[in-house]
Image (cartoon, rainbow, N blue to C red; front, side, top):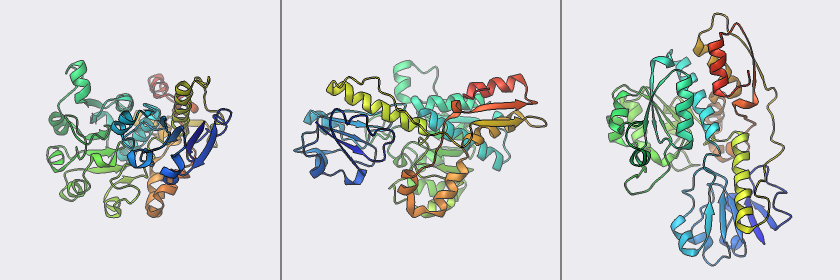
Length: 373
C-alpha cells in the first residue's frame, strides 16, 4: 500500500509507516504522476482533489485533515468510487479562541462594552456554536442564522438573515463554501448584504474567503457601512488583495484554526479514518508530542478591573490576534510561509489561571471558557 501525505500535516510521521509506503510532499507537489499508484491521500485544502489529479490513479481513499472539504470534488469522487472524509469540528475550539481574541481586541481599541452588544452568527455548526458559546460568556446577546438547521430543527433558535443584519453590532461568518443551490454561500456577503446592515457592525470572516465579495468588502469600508473588519480567509489565497488588507482592522493568513490542538485533532481523525477504511487496526490512534508554549500559567490581579478587562487579559495571554496581523502586514508575500511555519498556539484548557482579587462569578466565567482555575 502507498499513501501520499501533505508534509505540513503535523504529528503524523511514523503513524502509518508500519502499514504502507509513505511519501510526504508539499501540497502543490501532489501531482497526477505522484498519486497514480497511490492507494490513499492525506491532504489539506491546498491540494485540489479532482478529476485532473485523480483520473487513472489507483487512489481509493482521501482524508483531509481539515474542517472544510471544498477542495475535494465530491461528485467526481463518488462517481469514480473514491471514498473521502474530512475532519469536522477538529479546529472549532481554535476558531473560538481566535474570535474571542478578535472580539476583545476590537472592544479595547474601540472603547466598547461587549455585554452591551449583539453578535450575529451566520452558520451554526461545529464552529459557529462554539463562537456563540464564548460570546455568551462575554455577556453578548447572540443571534443565530442557519437555514439548513432551521429547516431541520424549526425556527425557534434562529432568525432570518435580514433581521440579523439589522440588529447586530458584530457579525461572524461560519458557513461552508457552497457554490450553488438553496444554501449557496458563494458571495453570500455581497453589496446587498452590506446594504442590509443598519448598525454599522464589525464583521469577521474566518470561514472561506469566497463567502464575501472582495469588492463588497472594499465598498462597505469606503461607504462606512461597517465599523470594522477582521479577515482571516481571503479570496484568491495566497494572492490576497493588499489594498484590502490596508483598509481593515485585523488581517491574518488563514490561521484561525491553527492551534496545535486543532491540528493534532485533524491529524488524529485522518489517521483513524484511513485505519478504518483499510482495516489497519489503529482506529483509536492519537497524536503525541504536541508542543507547549513557554508558560501555561496566567497570573491575574483583578483589583480595579472590570469583568471584561479580566476576561480579556486571560484570553489575550493565550492568543493575541494582533501578533498575526502584524506578521502578515510585514510579510504579505509570505502568506503560505506564515501558515506553514505558524508558531505554537495552544487552546484555553492548557492554561492555568492564578487569580487574586477576582470575584467567584468571574472565576466561574474563566472556568466556562475552558481555563483551569
